[in-house]
Image 1 (cartoon, rainbow, N blue to C red):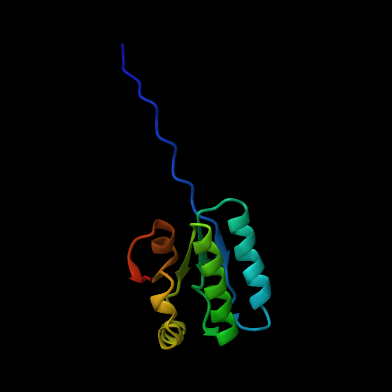
Image 2 (image 1 turned 120 degrees about the vertical axis):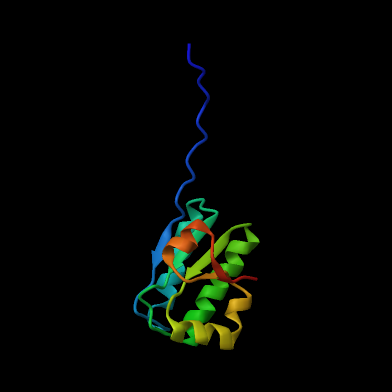
Length: 119
């Protein structure tokens, strides 16, 4: 007779909100709503995929910080996947890299490993 053991449930992949190549005041509200909706479905982690984002203004940064604060207040986490040196530089100048976990790739953000910066 073979012993059987219950298998632990597989970890669910966090939802991913894919951001556009230009993230600015024109689309910031819609992206905030998408991130908020992902958390509203009960996700404890949401990944903002900025792998194609090459431009990001201060309104867009503000959107990410507000989404982070809302998530953190509920014990959840917003992760950013940001490989673009230009976008990373803006985040560093504005201090976002001290507030939000930023990863170099989507895979790293999904796994929660290889964090570039973290609060």
